[in-house]
Length: 506
Image (cartoon, rainbow, N blue to C red; front, side, top):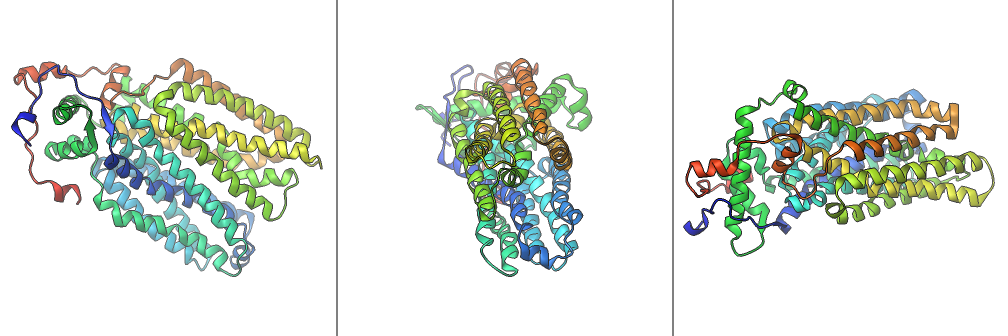
């Protein structure tokens, strides 16, 4: 680093960081873990429907089927809790690495299962792995992203989860035409492929610069920060140094005054408000009704007269419309903003659910093909609307509103809220559909309206702000960085740098 570029005058404007190919590719590679999450979560729905699967594990009762599906969610719950500790202790990168290794073992256990107990054990282990992925990947991508592009970069997690679900549906559809144990062992073995790719390349990903700073590795953090951020203008390195120095000083101030713990998270008003919003956005995501439709769409298709391979074919097509719509969201979320995207989505989902409720009440069990087609169309439309809004935003919003010291812990609590609500809905939905039928949709019509109102009145907008600036929206005002800089002179000196290449890739 040249001496002329190792300082910047206090108060000099810092250029807006661009999204570099290096940063985007890092986030894209981390999102392979998101793809793994989508495949692992979705592959079981078609696998357990194959006749060869049921024959191999006979007697395959409803209780066993429920255990195979629900234990995955239980494993995910504990994986999230574990990731909250490992993400702070060993880093976001190492947590992804460990989760990929566990997922590989899980896929091998499931594909090689010789009895149902072994299969269930593999599902629990797999749930644990993807729970870790689901918690830490949005955090990692949020921390490496430039403020202007954080929505796009963080939203890659949801995009690849959607791709994973879609891939799982089409793999299941294709294997429905095969015979023998290959019909169900191959889909389960596919889970190993993204895990292997992730393990092979994770060493080349950088650590999160904010995690490095939090752990006192400022020299390495600055080197990573320079690679991740490229500023416009002729004073590129000076602009990088200004922003890095601001981030470093604020984090040092937080570290002096904050003891990271769950007690601090719940007892400090500013953190408690952040946690409340994080939990609310996760709750509204599940209470939208999207997973009820995802999991029971085949039952809905059967209810309007669809039979045979057409059911899994529709499920495969359904799995594609969400990721396509989500790409539109990622392209515009940093312009739309988080808050308007969420409350507008809530209102539109309520309207969609009301129409779906009316159509289902009129055409379930009938031979009216026009009505049946309209019902299926609004099932698809609901997925599109959800993917334009909540699908990516809840993964973007949670890590960016939580402070560095509490990001992992706050994410644990909020994601666990998501999982618990999902488990409850999975348990009650079959009985609800059996008891009240189409009237069950009224629950989600109401929760979407409530969610839209709460977002509009309570949530804060975060687009375009640095993660440190977002803290000021919640009343956190650390010691002035300008004052700190002036106390040590009129220049912000860059950290002394050495050869960090080996530690960056270790």
